[in-house]
Length: 380
Image (cartoon, rainbow, N blue to C red; front, side, top):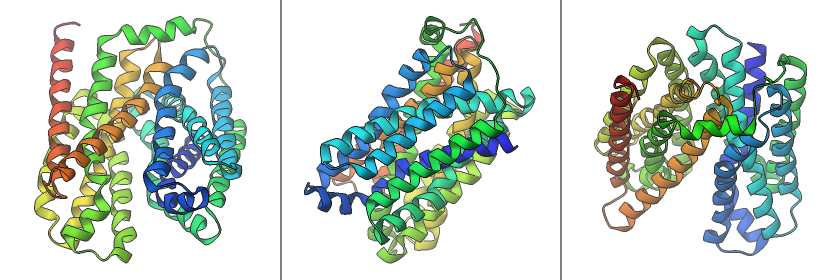
């Protein structure tokens, strides 16, 4: 359990560093003298780092022992955030945000493998869920604290704090996580073999499309709560905490479901997302029902642990790359959901139209899941 907590602390730091910037963008725009859309590219730079870094690092570091790899990844993450805190120009902070994002996917992928290796096979989902709990706790606690720190002192202080969390995680990993030598069979070419497995691509498709529904709504949840639900702007941070609570609950439940019946858990959670997203437009009209709806949408993150385990099982000889790609898929889901939700709003369909977009994406994920299950039964 202590090892899982140390792994989760790293996830807490990564989650805080990834999302807290969204509340600091106005201050950063003023500091660098750039427009709001321009400073928003810093979020895209981080996401691009995640998408590129996960497969690249997993392949190049295939021969490293996992504990050492985790420490190196956290060192890069800490250095990227500390450098962001000291960045003198907009261009330099853009570069450092990209570098900060590169370890993201590989860290969670390797951390999931380490956690799963320390428990019985029947409890892998719960172990992975506990590691990913750090990311969801960051949404509820870490991000508000980092935003408060950035607003009270300076946005640079928030990045410095995240960098310090990274350094603390390195010490915890070194002192608590057991060392295990890397297999002599590991190699970059063996890891790349994951990309030849159909089930890996189908599972990534479930995450990249089916998980995009949550992001379609959450990306625009603040204006939706204000304009549709009648929530006062000053209460929006409190309302958003319901997203974090939903994620924490979902993570725990998703890990447990994965251990009961993995494929069934993925299918059930996709259907759950479809139902929740379909209900949200009808719940958004009142502040309290809207907050319940937000909590339920946040619970959609429950699909994370089952997809993580599924990727590990689909590519048993290339688990590092397969597990790391899960978080590249989630970042693609983030980008896709936000983009399509924005198109619906810009098209004049209203703020709650993001839920219909999200439901459509979840249906797409369910269709891919159905095809994947059919291919499994046919022996593919």
